[in-house]
Amino acid sequence: MNHSEALRILIFCIGDIRMGTDMAYVSEIRRPDQIGRQDLDEIFRLDEKLFFPHPPVYQAPMILCIRHEEKKIGLMVDRIQEIDMPVFIEEIRILPLLIRADTSSSAIWAAVVKDREIILLLDCVRLTE
Image (cartoon, rainbow, N blue to C red; front, side, top):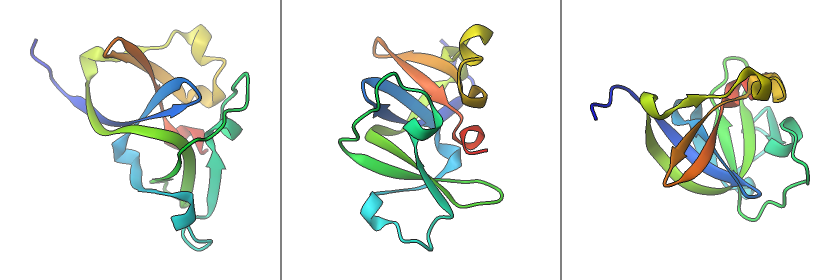
């Protein structure tokens, strides 16, 4: 198979859901205790922006510092599994409109199957708007 372009994604978990986001929008990854008040304008937990049937318990929280035009924003995620994993454009499956309509501003926009597991792709910039 001749692969064209690839996204480089960061894979993390929230509860038992695997998610990924484009590394191009992540400037840094830090532990919560490494963040000072002056470092970021706003920090939020992923479950504050997306609906989860049961509030997730963060076992190994990390802060993704998001590249955003106007603000310095931190997104708390859990259990980072892989950094800079290539996902080829041909592997990405856009979510049907019915599913996307139920997510916050369509922040979860696609999915990819890697190692027989589904990874939901999250647009972290759209999530912060």
